[in-house]
Image 1: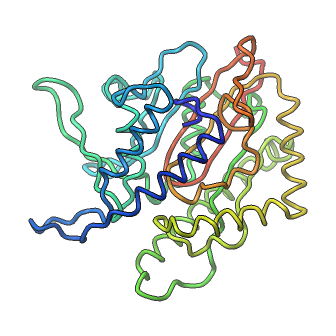
Image 2 (image 1 turned 30 degrees about the horizontal axis):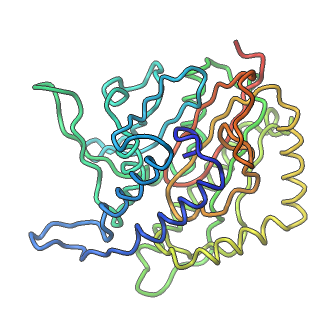
Image 3 (image 1 turned 45 degrees about the horizontal axis):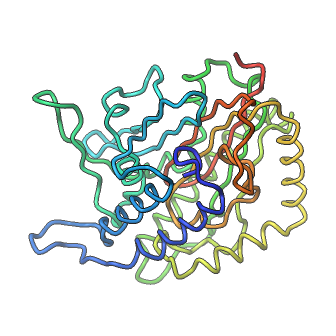
Length: 337
């Protein structure tokens, strides 16, 4: 939304609320009348609100994710191919490892559906890739375990686009999590889903910790890497629990009021205020946990908090990514050619 549709932060929050309220209301039985396993929720409702969001931003329902506008925010989303169980990135830009067929035909709707097809919630996205006799069918689901925190994939994409090594080129990285996991086990009838949520959250935090340690004496020491995630209150809220949005908002606001968090936000803001470019990587996703979790909305995308666009005279080279969990923002130093 921020990167490809160029929506303001306020517009994105409103769209997330509308999506959560409508996408998780129409429930299916887990097995269809034909005996096939299907998603718990109707993916057509999700598709309808995605199309409405795209159209409200001034684009057609079949608008491609591909964006050839000069100096615009680059976007990629993460999903898994069901056929090969491997990571697939749908991108808005050409890069050395970008799948040209996907680039030329993936719509914004298809990219959103692929990355939000959470197991047991929504049916996979089935897509015809290629044209004519050379075409083939594939199906995609959300990034699942291993890609919920996309920092490593982001690092790879940044290297492909701008060349490595990257450490000296990066002015700032902001990583926004969706709440730390509980230490105890889940109980009740939702045990299996509880275990999955715990694994997802734990994997995201482990990835964040590993990245922190890998860059401890570079980006971290230079105060160019900042990580924010709610400490308490979101541990057992399911992906589909739109009715819990008030709890999500309250827990997030309490986290932001904390002294340590406030100091971290101030330090991050000072870093961003001194940057000489507006180049960004931003990771965005369509799951409910992101609702109102943005500790510093002005750092994401190509618009500021009030929604006004950045000055056209500024160098704007950016990438946005979408997937199942955490949010990441990356600024590139102005010295990049």
